[in-house]
Image (cartoon, rainbow over all chains, first blue to last red; front, side, top):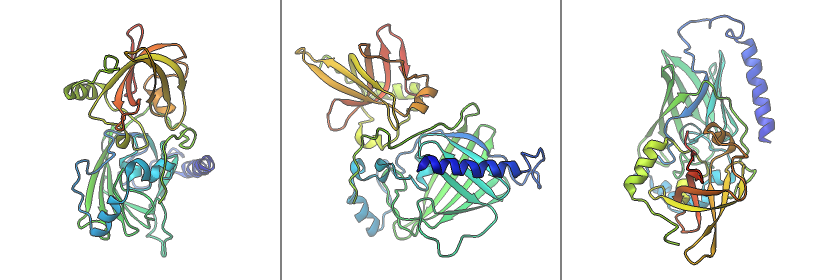
Length: 228
Length: 128
């Protein structure tokens, strides 16, 4: 299923790029307003846990949920389910490739073999069906891509341990601070699960000679997942 | 078994991590392996599984009584290993190697591999 998904996504990306000003040999319509963040990027520091020493500001709801789970058996990712967001961006130690078009930023991640789409030309859709990746919309503020995401299901974890609710709301500020470095500052709001917003930062390094490779999570997965 | 298993001090672990760069794996390995400790075993390769989402080296390790202990070492996916210089045919059954990594928290004979040392002393790390 994932292979078909990836192929479909690649077809979309190819079509987008074919129609983009860059592919036509032209500069973007508004030079300087849409910095180039395309390329293959790898997290500089793998962050499996946002709170490795504890101290997450849980609400009673989230604390109960957290204490009822065992990362050795209950992590949804053990079953090769999608990491979802923000884990897709901060706790996946495999490269991602960013494609840009005027109406869309598309990220293909090698590890999850998943596609993230950030819509640049619309508001959030009404009556969103909860999904693993939610609904991401973006806009450029100077050199920063500001991405707002809602519409999550509660089947994923924020990192390798932290639960969240369907009310989770992410705001990301993504900017390329130099040619080889991309930074994503993430604010995670979830009033059902946390008493204050959580913040995370991920730094990515450009891997110009890399290409996204095949990764098949279910091939020889020896980890046991205790579905609850 | 103790003379086959060398527990290094935490400082050595930190030095190894500092020098070795970032080791990449997937499935919540920090939940399964004790990343603050290092274990070293020397043994004979019985198989090398070049598979997703993790590759595995299986080793026969002789303990102090001469009995064989079946060890396994977990690595990352082939795509990441290839970027670190590994190849699917880099190990074969019968190869004598030393495997160094983080031991399982539950005491089972398995590790999250940091590097191997071939019989000729050549080292190969999983870090990029």
